[in-house]
Length: 199
Image (cartoon, rainbow, N blue to C red; front, top):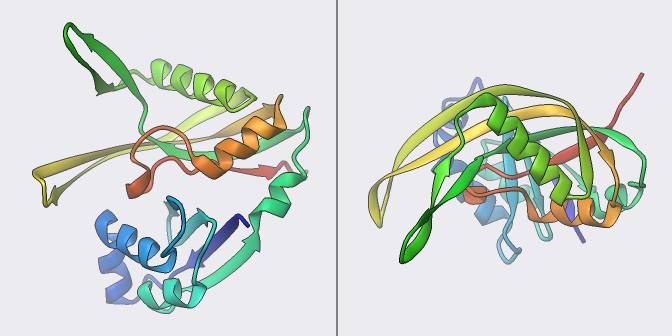
């Protein structure tokens, strides 16, 4: 069973603001609530945390997020209704990268920084997911630096996209919604969500 949980947090609380200021703390909260799940995906949208995984303890997530109100839905059932030809809105925070060849060594992943190249990167990822990109905007970009046990500083880059897509292959899209897009998934990148266009 695939679950989509939305945790709405009270940002007036100091402990909640402290958690939201640290991707490592959010990651720890998600992992504690999704214990035993395959790699959970998550994305922070303001005071709302979206989590997609196959196993979740909502009460534990609420407690780790200062008593957040957690709404849980059967995501598998919802995305089963996706059909070819549908036009959907989407949201994604991702780390666009490209691989640079190095003779005799593994390729080096480097960030894509040009805005047009970032849009092409997304269009390619959506094509891989069985979709055709429609009107797409880059809403924001952030760079986080934090200490990791195995190295002094880790860098998380995130580009936030919003837009529309047309479904060409529903099965490939459903697989991508469960598996995520790009790298950096442990720290809030990669969760693609879709919704019907209203009005």
